[in-house]
Image (tube, rainbow, N blue to C red; front, side, top):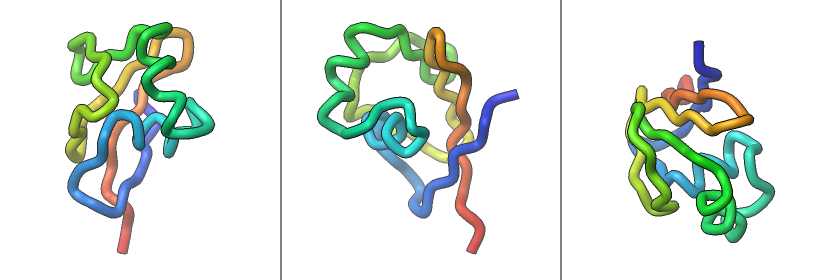
Length: 74
């Protein structure tokens, strides 16, 4: 079961999500990270740091784990 990462908005970029999930330390690292690691969004390989993620999307990172975009509770 994927770890839920809560966001306050309806969407977030893949680069921002990787930082929020503590997979990378800064947004600037996203481009390099996505070249070095396979990242799957809803089962499809994706290397676009600007990819828009919506609620319930699942991000799987090789050697790291699986994460799901969730809605922060009010």
